[in-house]
Amino acid sequence: AQSVTQLGSHVSVSEGALVLLRCNYSSSVPPYLFWYVQYPNQGLQLLLKYTSAATLVKGINGFEAEFKKSETSFHLTKPSAHMSDAAEYFCAVSLPYNQGGKLIFGQGTELSVKP
Amino acid sequence: DTGVSQDPRHKITKRGQNVTFRCDPISEHNRLYWYRQTLGQGPEFLTYFQNEAQLEKSRLLSDRFSAERPKGSFSTLEIQRTEQGDSAMYLCASSLAAPFATDLEQYFGPGTRLTVT
Image (tube, rainbow over all chains, first blue to last red; front, side, top):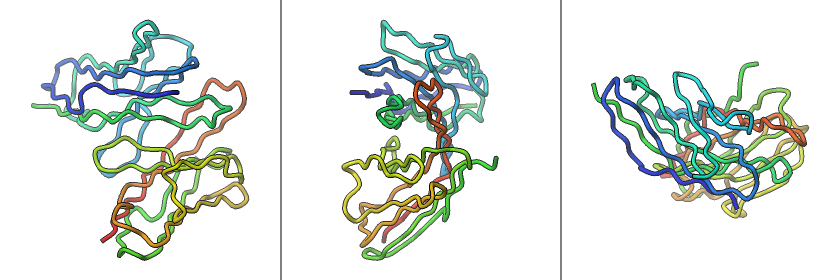
C-alpha cells in the first residue's frame, strides 16, 4: 500500500537560508510523487512532480526535489528562502491509473520564514 | 481554461442541517476527486468519478454523504444531517487520466470550508 511520511510538522528558517522539507514514501509500484503548497484558506497548488523521467525535478518558485529510490525519499529544497514561501507543504503519492489515481498525502509541514 | 472552481467558498450551518457543495472541473478532464481536509492534517480521499460513474468511495464517506456527477461535468457533494465532526475544508480536484499515462497530476479548486455549529 502507498503511504507518505513527512518528517517535521513545522520547520522554521531565516530569510535567505536553505529550505529542506523531508518526505519519505512507501509504494508497491513505481511511484508518482508530488509536492503541493497551500496558503491559508486556499486550495493546493502544485510545486513539482516526479513521474519517472528524471530524478532531480525542478518546480515553480525555485523549488526542486530529488527522487532517491534507495532511500525511498523525495525531499523538497530551495537554496534561499523568501518570506513569501511561508505556507503549508504537502508531499503526496499517487495510486496508478488502474487504481483510481487518487492522491495519498502526508500530514504536511508548515514552513515559517523569519526576517 | 479557468481552472477548477468550487461553490460556496465558505458555509456555516447548524448541526442537523443538510448542505450541498458544487465543483466545476476543468472542462476536458474526465476524472473528478473529492477530498476532506481537517485542521492541521493533509487532505484525505473521499470519492472519485470517471466521467459520470462514481468508481470508488472511501470508508470516510458515511451514509450521510452522497456525491453525483451528472453528465460527467460538474459534481455535487451533499452532507445530510450535518454533525460538528463534519467541519472541514472540502477540496475538489480534476485530472485528465488515461491508461499508461505518466502524468496523473490533479488540479485543485480553492475548497469549501464548512463550519457546523
